Image (cartoon, rainbow over all chains, first blue to last red; front, side, top):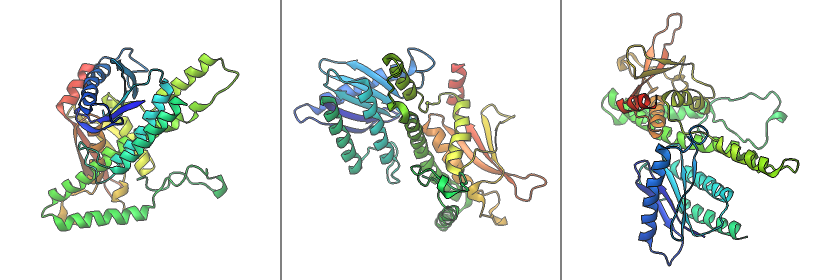
Length: 143
Length: 223
């Protein structure tokens, strides 16, 4: 089950953070997202294998904590998407699919001429699309 | 989609692919919109430099969004056939196929020449329907590169009055290039200039790109 999604900008400034459970503490999720940024930077600056994975967008499983798994995705403009989930058996393909649709919603939100790059994303349409994607992810992974 | 002009002529309307949709915007519609943009800004500024700066800022916003859009779009077209499954392939080969096509999406450019050729070919193709005429390295300084075009699409219906001096509406395109480079992590100063060419009545336009110091240092470090 997806607990939290976040969009972090080029200078590691948060652009959009949304949690999907009522019980969890928002602060703890923010902290997890913040810690995962270090892992992203490490992956970007020291690639494990040079060549095909050097400039890949999907960063994969960043690190597993006590009961969460964190996935990362990097776009061409150094904007990072972070996904925090409590599922234990989530498939790689599902996460890639999720990030692809999330990227699509993000591009649409940024193409808004009233959006200032570097500021938080305040579009309601974006928030709705993200919650739809999260819901369908929940259904596809549990089904 | 800001593509302008005819991308591909189909002689027979039956040959047009159905699902592609219209990827072109009418050139006259864009020309009117651009002329309105220039006129609007002209009434709000006092001098030429300010007008050029405003056009460039408008282009910067476009460039930042174009980069995001292009990366996302190119990824989509590569992933589209990853859902293919064949019983004749053993399962490990099929999985490898899927992964390879997913990786082959648009790469994040980290090298100078990479991002320059990206701007010169891909961005130009999407915006103007053709690749730029030429990409050259400046001779005097290490950090200067030039993209030349016989005539910029945005300038096609514009003639600059003599009293405006060296003003060039290509500042809009310079802003687009600056937006793309800046969002990709290559800060630069981009300007548009007219270069007179003998034998041609209208001068050639050159987009001059001057990269910031940190870009050159990073490039030297990467080897």
